[in-house]
Image (tube, rainbow, N blue to C red; front, side, top):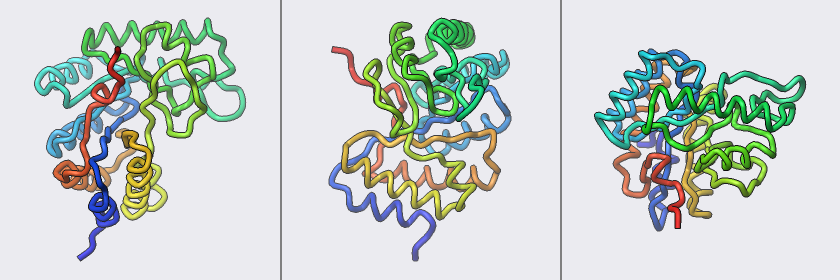
Length: 247
């Protein structure tokens, strides 16, 4: 009998080699209760998760909780920088915090300030990855990040090419798929992304937004991830494990 996850399982059964995948949840610092519910779900599924944390939104209690979880289960939870305030600075066009409306000096000021805040909260646990709010940034932003010692940038797959940093792009916006077509749409998107990553060998990225996830949505995702974590053709990894190894 086919179930909602069948299209995904069918693709996995055709693969000649395993595919690496990661889960990135954006906007840590917003709606802590839903974030902790997501972390509990991921722990039950046995799937690692990386949190893109908004520096100006993280509180001391949240940082303490995340640090305790990171220390208790190394590799299960990762934290990296998600902008600074998650504020739009574009007067027109698509929303962007580090977009072309801001020059390098203004961007660098916020990048450094945000990084210092997260280092205060997480110390050496903070990972050198940057996810820009709304998954987009100006052409000059990657070079600024590289100059500050960041090791990777995570945006949408298909973002404008850049040479300053390695990228760990996301393929699926889970909440958008859920909103537009529920479980069936999410399964179709995941199956298609698996086909594409099987063709090019790149890791698959699943993006979540815990602050807008309903309990039913979270329960379904947890059940799917529990099953997928036990399939030999899909390897869920922390983002840090997928970074290029320095020569």
